[in-house]
Image (cartoon, rainbow, N blue to C red; front, side):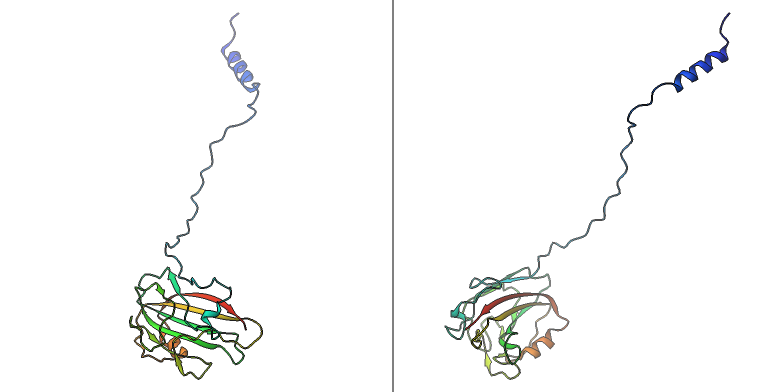
Length: 200
């Protein structure tokens, strides 16, 4: 007698259910959402260095009151776009009477990226840059660079601070550090520091 169709169908379903399951089920790789990419500026940070001494190391005697007292060579990189001039301040935050100002220089042309050793101690340089007053905490009577001259004892820090400005200040020569800082407010694009040490 010929098998009935419904019996054949049932047998096929039963056989399919009895097949062993695969040991590993292959899955399509999950879709990974692209990570948010932080947009980084290609602009280098303003950086200041000297060929005379390395950062946080001792300044040679040549650049102090015990030597020739000439300014050290300085150079910088990474000036921001739009820089119109540079200003420079050097001071000693460890002086006993308070922060002692050693050098104030401003309206350095934007095309400059270095200062030679031994900048003349005169009010206006050939580049048009101007020296401010220095040598003291609140009262000043000198222009130009005057190097480290701490009292005997522990080392003092001497901090060179370079400012990239979006404008030319137009200050007359012999401005004080305080006057320079006020004039720079709202115009600073970037700042770099270089610290050297000196002791007697």
